[in-house]
Image (cartoon, rainbow, N blue to C red; front, side):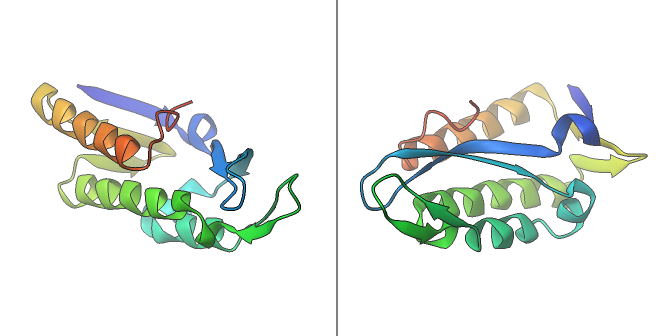
Length: 125
């Protein structure tokens, strides 16, 4: 199975961040430099961790104070593994994921486990 996506299709990241004070969900949308993120995946986490959020409850907090920071770290670990195995590549402004069915199922299981670990069924929303 081979999946190819252009930078334009992938450059926006969005998910919900839970306020550590009241648990309210705050929408997080960010455009990221995927070319840089491919070379230095932790740059995505560093940017998220330094983002200041404001909740309607009056709480202000940085991304590093949320469990989503740990979730992103776990997802980066999976990405780095795929990258080390040569299963994800970037050429001519196209990202490719090339994995067999059984490996695909293994990685989908890992992603599901990460979602369950953080009680986040909405990882892919």
